[in-house]
Amino acid sequence: MIATDIREQMKQAMRDKDQVALDTYRGVLSAFTSELVATGKTPQDEVSDDLALKVIQKLIKQRKDAISQFEAGGRADLADEEKKQLAFLEKFQPAQMSEAEIRTIAEAKKTELGITDKAKAGVLTGAVMKAVAGQADGSVVKAVVESLF
Image (cartoon, rainbow, N blue to C red):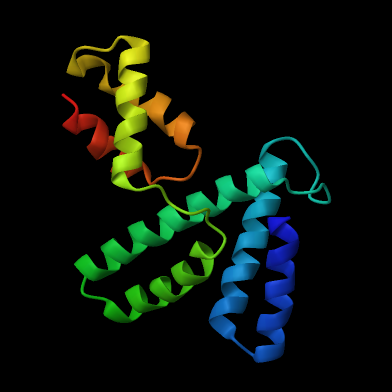
């Protein structure tokens, strides 16, 4: 269970006095609780691995967005802090698919759905995102799909 692993990592971060890791893991556990409440469950309910991965993917995306914003704003110090947190989050992310693997899935879905024009690219992107199930970044999937037209 991912949630259990994160709790153990948080305890270790406390022992090691690693403030960045501790803050990151506390943020993840807080996000788990928020997601449970948002889906109508109680905070004491068990966090499934699917839910945990969904939340972690969202947090990774937030970190990447923050890094690009901080770098654009000339705040390298804040960007570095986000990069450190991102490294801890990426440990829990499933292995990412290569662009070639994504292209194979996208071509198969394009044929399966009978999509011939670029107007349906959004539908194809959605189908490919479901097929890769969190094993690929959305921006990579979008780029692959756009290259098929």
